[in-house]
Image 1 (cartoon, rainbow, N blue to C red):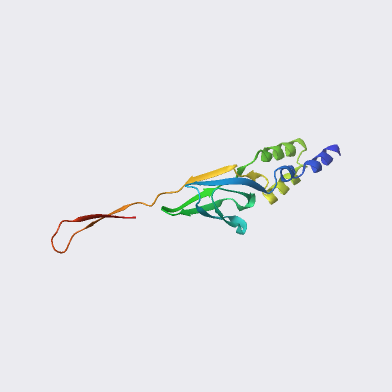
Image 2 (cartoon, rainbow, N blue to C red):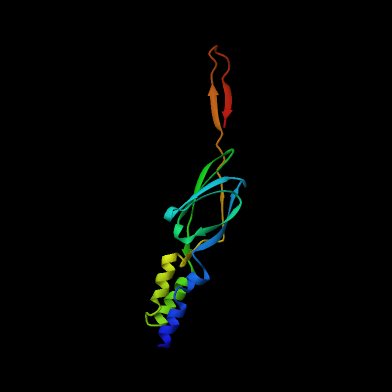
Length: 148
């Protein structure tokens, strides 16, 4: 009986300690880029870097697409990894003979068994300079022009 009571007390422990989201700092090089974030469960956000925001674990993986003047649109993915609470739930299940499976089910349902790293940064790709070689109609020397 005590084991069952203990299992119910720790059910969903990651949900209570970690919660369903993580605070993540997002930065770009250069700073001041406009970024659109999109993920699972309809998650969407727009930010100007640097920024700190709460990201729901259930939105993983999150696509981060950033633009800045003089830089190409650069896209990266922010993934959530397993948290240590996954192992704690497994230990509780083994210790209680399976009675603590409720905790793992609750944590999975709210996304508390995963988390994001605290900081995410990405370097934007500079616009490539295109070389243009033009010839003159009158037979003059060729011109070498650069266009962004």
